[in-house]
Image (cartoon, rainbow, N blue to C red; front, side):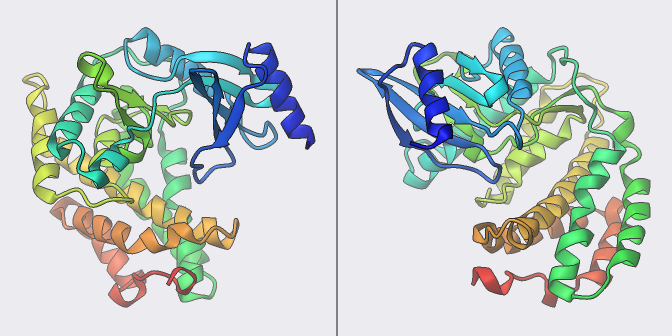
Amino acid sequence: MSGRDAEIGRFLDRAGWAGAARAPLAGDASFRRYERVRLGRKTAVLMDAPPDKEDVRPFVAIARYLLDAGFSAPALLGEDPVNGLLLLEDLGDGRFTRLLEAGAVDERVLYEAAVDLLIALHKEPPPALPAYDWPLLWREAGLFTEYYLPYVLGGDQAARHEEAEALWRRHLAPVTEDLNCLVLRDYHADNLMWLPDRAGLAKVGLLDFQDAVIGQAAYDLVSLLQDARRDVPPALEADMIARYGAAQDAAFDREEFRRSYDLLGAQRNTKIIGIFTRLWVRDRKPDYLKLIPRVWGLLERNLANPALAELAGWFAEVAPPETRHTPPEAR
């Protein structure tokens, strides 16, 4: 037994789960691992986050905030933040992604429930968290020129990196002045659970929210509707944007919101292309590379907004269509 396994065993003993059987669950792009633990008829989920690489305390704080507000985050059954271990309520296997692939639940039902949750969440006073400000937005968008352009085009891309920074700064300035709600950041089908036995908004279970910040309301909506892992029909996307807008007050500016939606979508999709490339270049994880063409398609939809014409022109110059492909390692 490894030292880490022994530490996990002691943690489960302290949490009242001594002798529980353990089985791996699907991981993600981070250093966290998940296991389902079973003791008799009881099940729970173990989060194993190596403390030298991950900090579980933000997850704990945000989970408590969401639970107190009546949302279905996993209940906390055991905590050892020093050693990066949490024991969480098992929300089951009803991920939106899995249910949609199986045709088990109508797509519109799931997306309407997810949008309604955002509407309610954005009306809650947000917790004290870091802001989704210019430095963070640029650090993310800059991954494109830091990783993708050098990998696909080769050569030194430092000049392009400086160009991109100035361009994104001009475009993102308005949204950094409108940071007023909790942004979960990875709000998409693979991190949402369907809990049909619960009532109202509690039917939507929330996962993977430890990186939450205080940001602009359009961000999580675009995260949901422009999914790197699955195709959301454009008509459904349009309907869900309209559904979100219809729930706002009379001061809500639909045109300005759509500009923010496409701008933050462009930032997010640019970031994702950079992250997926970094996962291969730095971490030797090639599985995400095959998703890059879909993300390029989403980015192109964002850049079609006339308000983003300058950004669209820059992308056309530095990354013309023939460069927007799945890198060789993923083919």
